[in-house]
Length: 482
View 1 (cartoon, one colour):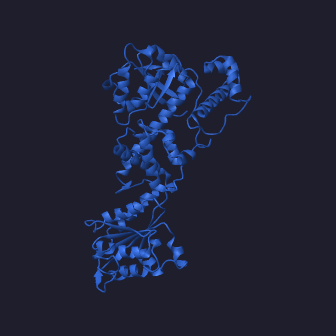
View 2 (cartoon, one colour):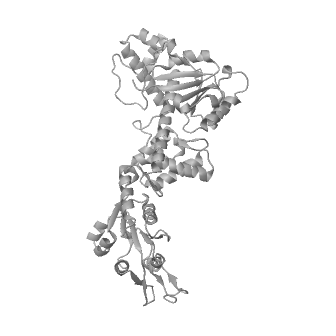
């Protein structure tokens, strides 16, 4: 049996706790408490995995506001357990109040036990995921972070180690990788760790610009060099003297300008447009491209000698789909930044939303992830980012039955496995199975027909998102009252 989920039931009605705990089943370890003072509850993370808070009108006298306030007090604690609120059916005001204050989910009274087990299990999984994100964040403050780059995956760890080695050495670097992987961030990290960090890095993108404009941007011009050149202009190469020049999309540099850049790398000198005077510079060059320069050399689209000059050290940034383990860490990082920027309450992702982020292919890489999280934060209204707030392309990737199911489908699958397992363990004796499940025999027959269960059917091998167990009653002695 898997480890039990510890449930803390906060209620004034301890008589209701005993039958509720019996019906939960052996996969839960429940306990109850009448204590409503948060300072007397101790370390919640040590005593429970999920909190079930009783907000029924019949469970307490007077106003329920103190219990709603209790949700706020609990959510202020670090790594607090998720809260599931038990509310009277139809009391929309209490349901909304509980969710607004930070409850993970709500369930109506009288509770459907299959649904309650499902909600508690999902809340527990969400809590486990949040703790894993916290662990990754703590790791990112050490070896999992290189300036603005984040990553705990083996590929990123190797990249960080290489960057730290080559940063102090004044060699040219070629960074490869798809668009949006963070090539400029890596270049800036190398610059910040080098001896040139006292001066700002100078960056320029060669993509989709006319050759004459690129030449003027890089080399500058003298006054009167061409029509409209009213003053002397110093280019990016000259501005990067004693510092680092970062040339993005170097594969787009025209063949006409490649010999001029080669001369800068070889002789550390150049002439401005319209001038015969040589300008000497002391620069380090870091280039980046999303194109295959090897193939371009073979096709005659890129000079071989320039390629070798640039490619002293080559560093490859992996695509985000190649390091999916970093998605939760990056998503949480972007969420916190966006929430602070837009003054939103969002502090975490729901389990389904995080699952959608992890399953998506991310053709736009880290930049697309940042934009998606920013959009979700803008649309958010509560403490958690939900799946519907993500872009449609990300949602559609997890809407197949093999990846994610609707709430109704998941409840149906849970019921089917629960009933089927109970029937098998009771030797397909329906009267005994109904007694173990705590339902009428006629209702069990209807369930068997509705769920399409066949006589002597084996338990399906398809893994569920949660572990299920037969809801056999617990002996009265198993109920613990705090």
